Length: 511
Image (tube, rainbow, N blue to C red; front, side):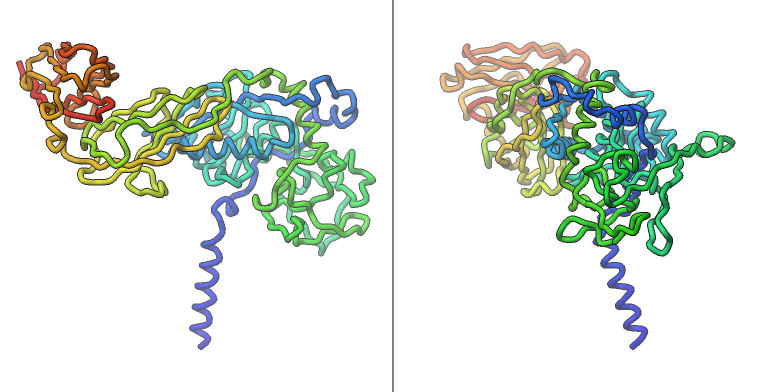
């Protein structure tokens, strides 16, 4: 019986551990503790930092860097990027601070940076790739073993496992970048306990990683005053803000129904309290966090209008996107060639980019392919034959990325020879056996004329060799193929228009 009970307890312990999200097994933040000189100056005279722009929306440019392994695998997916970006703007909505993508995403292939084990490697990554006049943000698989960190002279880093919808690590690290410390400053690396009297001061190492740079350098130390519950020293203790109550918890913790810690703390004067889990700058679970305090907001805005003014721009330069793309080709449920199928959608006003996905699973829980493009069409390579594929498209730009996907549509893949022959649809292509440099002729019946068409030639692997738009205003069109350097073999001509997608096999002779 005891053996069975022991096994049951072990199984239950395993089940509970398996339910803990990966993000809660990582240290929440690797940012070095400390109060920046700017914040010390601000806290001594906050009223002098109020300006005419104090109520304006502040637009902050973010330069995004997406890390991958040397071979390009493992990169944060475009859909997850957009979800994390939307979560960041949602977290900052009440602050009057709004973020936009300054430039296109920077895609970096480096296994060493993608899985960097320490902060000095992160320093190298940021100082090598940073762009000026922007908040530089890096997404990687491992960011020195943390959920995230901020380097005040470089940028912020966020781990993939800590950047889903509902996660607030990015908001937390951006808070650091805009001058905010932890509300429990001084307690980093220490475990609070009521078994010992709470001290009036705490000494802390303000680099966290000095020993990884030079072990001969003694630890740089600073001292923080421990905040009292009655607020008597709130303007000079801990984070210097009086509307963030005391917090001595420097580890991940869950909250109760009132969003307070379940751990009671006692200040140096004997005042008992529970930490406020609603603050983004605390270490409470993401499910507890909802806000920055008013004083934190004022400090971040003042920091942007002074020390970080180069990150700001005045007004959005791209218009709002209000809808999803209309799907044009293939029609929903239509057959498509197993190689060289073209997906086409309508442009959306103000959109500069489109995220396109396709999969064989209608829930899109697994995506076989996703790509960000500036075009409104995509020619696919080889697919599986006799399968239903589902696809959808999402429009966005640098300023408006919290946009919906189009309703999904499907197509069914069939062999190229199963597509209706050209002649039966009142058009034809000839000759089918061609030499390098030889032209093709397309002939259209009346029902095919006055259409906007897209003509492509792909090889047997689905690689697009040539593509051109056509207007079938004439009954006959000559196509001069740039086939001089193409290998001999079989190719497929694909004609896409309002009548659907049609293909014709071509044989390119050698010689």
